Length: 155
Image (cartoon, rainbow, N blue to C red; front, side, top):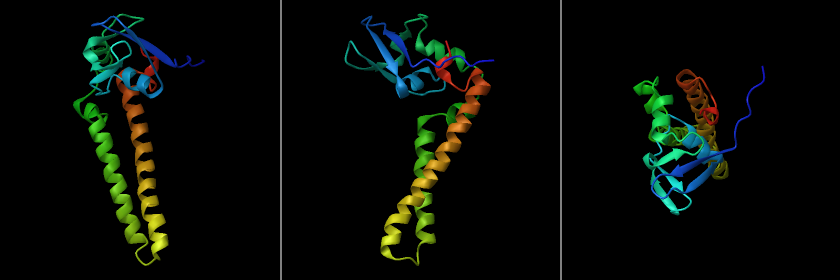
């Protein structure tokens, strides 16, 4: 069985001005993710950010808020919290600080040059490792909630 190709972009319509905007890359991933807590998105015609509730997908006509509600109906409160930006940024910040603290302890008896290099490096490595684990956990949650690990395939 072959996997369907992942679309690279999708277009939405701003209901206020009827202008269309094409989203790509990370912005497309954020907009297509039904567990995303992004409150605003860009309108290319208005040249500014507007509330997500003012936009609908151009290909289906479905409001993005209705799309998110439909695809995220099976999500638990804990899953929604875990996928929120606040939890993501907070967890990664704590991982970075903990990694640097661990680096400080590990390299306490080292020279200053080693400390300058290794303390930020251990913080960075903790962020990378925790971030990778969070990405996989989020993909698993999306699979359980939506039936897809790649939300850009959702319609």
